[in-house]
Structure formats: structure tokens, C-alpha cells
Length: 336
Figure 1 (tube, rainbow, N blue to C red):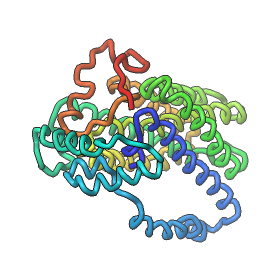
Figure 2 (cartoon, rainbow, N blue to C red):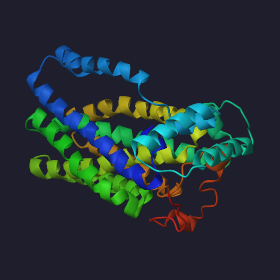
Figure 3 (cartoon, one colour):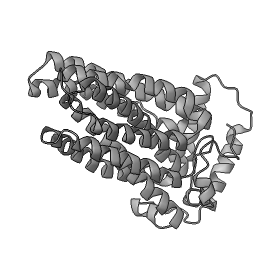
Figure 4 (cartoon, rainbow, N blue to C red):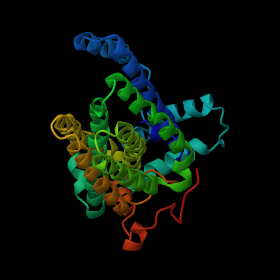
């Protein structure tokens, strides 16, 4: 939702800053788990504070893009005017009139008019269907490997809480690098290389003798660093690829399928208690394959978010095989 009210050049910094808060929470969890050893008390300690967030539903503004896609012009203009006032932006006198005209024209141009979209609509047209399947599969691999590494960390030997803390701390430099590199190099190169390298380091760790604990830990942390990068970028790419009218439905489906990966990850990690290298190999293969399929997705850096179904279908429709292997910013970009 935060990305929908952010310009193309600011989406990466806003997203990485938000993700850092998640990492700080995981680091805090390591400290809480060290002090609260009873799992029931631990669950209460980390979940009860979220009850205070229920009240946020009354003061959090709705997405202007979503309101626009639903034809709620008056509500959208109120929020946009408030954003301009808080950010102290002086807009032209006719800005809001022109914005309203463009919004109504875009909605009228939508070939499917006032239809209420459902999740199945992202599979009706070939290009959007292809992108949706690739994003869902990539997200499944990412969530399975990223969460699986968290579950597997205690099996590396040594202190369980220390291993978990180290695997959490390694996320801080990952988000710092993403903050400066996402807009400069693009989404696809970082997503592709981080997953392929992350999977490769896991397989390399599986080939190291178990007695070389420090070497295995070092390769594991490098892989966790890489998968942290891809874990964030895959959500960013999904939010920038799905058109506004089905962005919520597409994101929900992606998260639902990814949850299957979350459920499987502790079971895969548990295989390490029988064959220590087996989870590393499985997670490594998932990472490499998940990274390879992202080559078929279009680059989203510096591009406007697609609003209608037609825009979502047109985005990246004419990619060639040569474009798939062009890792970098697109030749044609947009300005704020």
C-alpha cells in the first residue's frame, strides 16, 4: 500500500526502509526468545502487542490509486490534497481538475468498464497470466528458502539463539545495499543473481564436511544475505507488475501460494536432523530455479504502476529472448 502512494524513483528507498523495521523485529525476537524459554509465554509476548494496531484501521488513509480504480473521485482528491499539504508541495491551480479528467478518461478507456475484478482475471490474458505464474512461483521459492534458512539455523551447531541472531543480523547489510542499488541496477539483476548465488552457496555448504563448522556457517550466512535481498525484491516486483485494479487480489494469491512454501520449509529443515546436507541441497535448487525464471519478467524500475487490465497486459508484452538476458535498467524509463 505504501508503494501505491510513492513515485517510481522513491519506491525502492521506501520499501527497504520499511523492510528494515521487519529485520529489527526479528533481531528483537532473538533476544525475547533467549529470555523467555517457555513457548506459550513466548507466543503471548510477541503477539499481544499487535492488538494495539487494530485501531490503525480508523486513521490509515486508503490508497488513492485504488479509489481512482473504483471511481471514488471525491475521496481520492481529499487524500491527494492532504498529501500535498503535508509534504508542502505547491501544485498548479488546475492540477486537481486535470488529474480528475485524466482519471475519468483512464477509467472510461478500460475495455472492461466498471467490472469488479476477481483473482481469476489475472489469468484471462496471456501476458498477464505468464507474469502472474512466474511471480507466484518465484515468490513460493523465495518464501520457502528464506523461511527455511531461519528454521535450519539452529541445526548448524553451537548455540541455537546465537545462530538465529547471526542469521538475522546479516539482513541489515542486505537491506542497506538494496537501498542504494535497486534504482541504479534495476530489479531483475538483483533478484536473479541474489537467488542464483544464494542457492549456489547453499549447495556449496552441503559439500563441505560437517566438522568444518565455521566454513558451513560462513557459506550459510552469505546465502542468507542473498536470499534476504531476493525476499524483498520479489514482493516489490509483484506490487509493480500487477495492475491496480487487481493488485490486491494478485498479491493475496501470491501470498497464499507462498504460504505453502512457508509450511513446507520447517519440514524440509527438519530433514537436517537425519541428513544434514539434504535441506541445503533442496533450498539451493529452489533458489537457483526461482532465480532463473525471473529472467522472463520485465524490468519494473522507473516505470509507472499499471492501472488498468489493458495496461497490465501491455506491460512487457513485446519482450524478446534478447530482452530476457538484458540485465539492467530499461532503455525507456519514465519520470516522476
